[in-house]
Image (cartoon, rainbow, N blue to C red):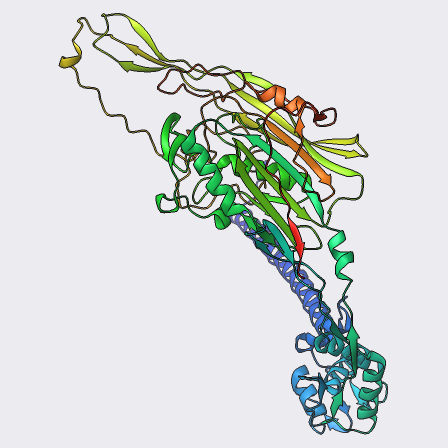
Length: 599
């Protein structure tokens, strides 16, 4: 006989199992909820504990000023018999110092300044200590030990009341004499801090919280004028040779004249565009050769980049901090590629900060196809240390794809080279640090890729030839781009790379074209340089190595209307081995006498 379970019993058993599983899930959820609540409670307790008695690593003065962020103890707290229950930290401070009416001042010569409320400062510090005990308590603040706040306030008052002596410094440039003029040093006042702290201590002891403290001062002498002025030297001088284009040379001279005599205070940032200003016809600037969308055109102010590039080399060698610079889109011919600074209004600009302890003066001049820039000041670099730039070409790039122009005046199926193309190139520039003429360090400063020029080819893809009278040349409207800037840059916008890289060229140049105030397309360029030499009126010497490399080099650019062929790319020069030109060739450099003392 078979034993079978009744259907009713099976149904009851399944129902009971489902009920048990449901209770298990509810029990697990309850446990998890309790654990989460416990964790949150512990976190809350920790936060409240830190707020009530925690103290950060700030100095006592900083902590005093941030007292309002502290929480009062949860227990009963009294100070000087005053109950502080229910008050915030700031309210408690106000309650404690209420009996002390503070209006103390300090006087020195013609200057009067308020004395900080020392009672309040000390109260904040004592109350912060009291807050460490979360249980509260009863405290007495008698303000007997005030030495810490007295010494701090004495130093602060002495700084506010004193007048620092002023050393002799560059005052202005005398265009009549062609020299910078120094100011005379002036005496200042130094406060007797020992006497001042004693007087503060006495006023607090006698509870004279409205006292007028007289600060005694003595004359503080500046450094002797002769001693200061003897520190000034020619930090660096650099000369580049211009072209024989009269209009371009006019622009170079105007830019040099605008730059000449500029004085830069310590820590002040120089801006080429701010100093030289916009190049306009009203100022006498001429239309000279410049690049516009890759083509050589006549543009107002063409050539001024020769002055900014010359200044860049001088600022670098002087130890100034270069804060903004861009190279040209195409290779320059008046300085070694990689050592140029292109300029346009309003960007790109050339900027650097005066890192010298004193003011520096900039001299700039143009004469006989030579542009010279010098910086004078107190040396930044240690004695015997020099900085220089060395650039080398590391890669040649194929010219861009040809640009074809349809010309139905040619025979069908024929082509004619209208403009020859040129190769692009990549240059790496190094910072050379030398000591006593021996190189001790060479580090990569930046890398620049210059674009090549696309060849222009005329062709007739039609089936018939037309006479010139039967054709009409289409007007070409190149996209307006700015030399040295990214191809998508819109004039008037900020440079997106300005705060990423001070030289703004650690990456290959974007595919773009130029519209700049810098390009002299004639050949014959050379440069001379000297750095950290004593202040003299002697002409700058010419580096033979640099002169040889530059005499016949012209910019690798699209030929001008005269169909000039591009000249060879200038070769790099080693600043360590390059010596002065003793031959005396290359033309005279203008004499510069930068300094004179007020008599």
